[in-house]
Image (tube, rainbow, N blue to C red; front, top):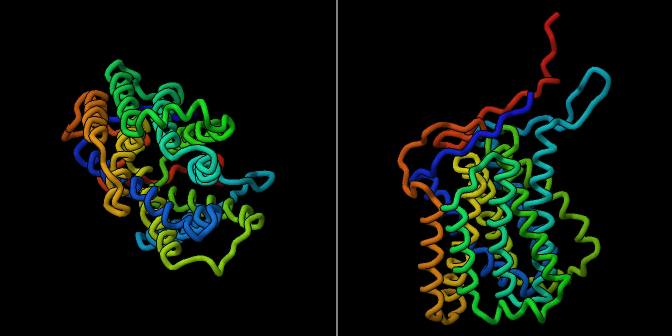
Length: 339
């Protein structure tokens, strides 16, 4: 029997805390990617951060007494891949592998400001996909809030970034749009997936993504002698925080408050990234940053029916408790009748 889509409960203070952590970890990735690619190729940065994340989350999963499900299960006539692994493969490919390569490639042909504008499309894709495929409500408040957030991101990036639409590579811009769509698909797939514990799901997803990232290394001039210690430590940081820990937090938040709520992080993340860039690289902050901050925060507030709800009205079928953990779902084909 098909599993019902249950509308996620309103966000609680704990969900907002998760969102803040996701923004802090995700927003730091831009500055550390910039440092990592100074001496290491983008494919090395992508594969390295995925392997660091995969190892870290696997250790966390095992420390909690969890383990990955078997990759194959036996049916009456043959062996097949377990259903939960197909979900982890799909989320790993769409949310980690392909975007990690599309963004660095596209940013070689477009300005970083224009790339930031395209990142703002991810919440819009997520809002639409979550409505059609994950049973999440699409209200006028939510549409208005997301529109304000998008406007705030465009103001943050500035008019020059918008002008770049006419002068930058069309193929590269299509790549950016595809990457944001893949991020949104990943978020909705995570919402639709069977209720596997977040650390288990994130571990399997990252292991799959890490293996998928290996082939690109065979087509890359590595120049290992040129890699600096700063680049290597940046790759480690990217693996631990924006990729590893964030992978677990994102799964938790999607299952607690929905893909649409998690997607709000893509409006707030650019603000944190700009602020961190100012601290690390002494970049100047213009007046438009503060105005953009006010607009984006207003959009986030408008999009939520009760911005600081303290109690869940109900627990969704794919939701979870405070620890963000659920028992794995047993596939029907795995239950053998007793003799």
